[in-house]
Length: 282
Image (cartoon, rainbow, N blue to C red; front, side, top):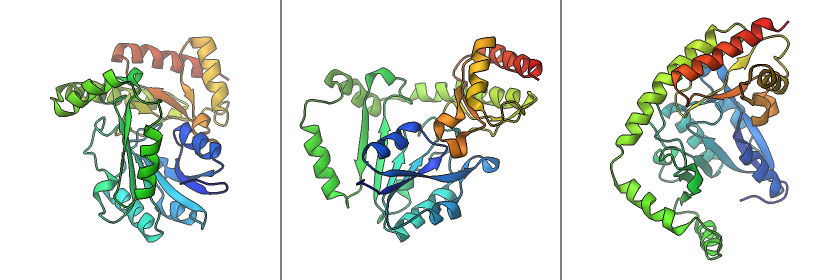
């Protein structure tokens, strides 16, 4: 898809490999704005204005890493319509599809004619990140890319074979673990959202999927230096977050990414330390 000088539209903020992979192949990752006050929904007008003759694809990460956003069906349909109008394929990363506190809608289900590359894997929903197994589904109008993938698959670098058999069984088997996991995560999501918004100097949108939360730093000392915030917090309170600028400086700066996988008791201790840290910071 990408040759020297081509552009790929990615959501801002975004999962870093989408930026680095595009750059590695000589392309330009172009961020489209997602609106924090609207739960990090993509700004469709902004996205469309970023399309040029060198644009080769639009990336959707839904549910989203790092924001936890879940795009509405209306928003997804608008992106699909824009992509179709410009004859652009959509790369749809759906690895958190069932870690969704709303109903998951795949953009691939919204058009029979648009071009889609759908990405998924075992790491998140099936709780097996160390197995390193993922998969890709292509729409029928991608014959050349499909042939290239088959050629790539002929080399000896692939997912481990023993690991693929239980994954196949898991896809066909019961999914009761997913419901249990979502119940736990929903409780922790609700607590993290409430508690972080209680801390003076922070505010956050409510994530509707994944196990991430992406608060905004409003404290004047750290509002434009999120990296210093996470490092100072680590050194003084032994609580670690990821600086938001690591997910794109334009839209990630002034934020940090948290994970609400731990039990509520552990989250509470961490957030208490964050509050103490900010209160003591002049």
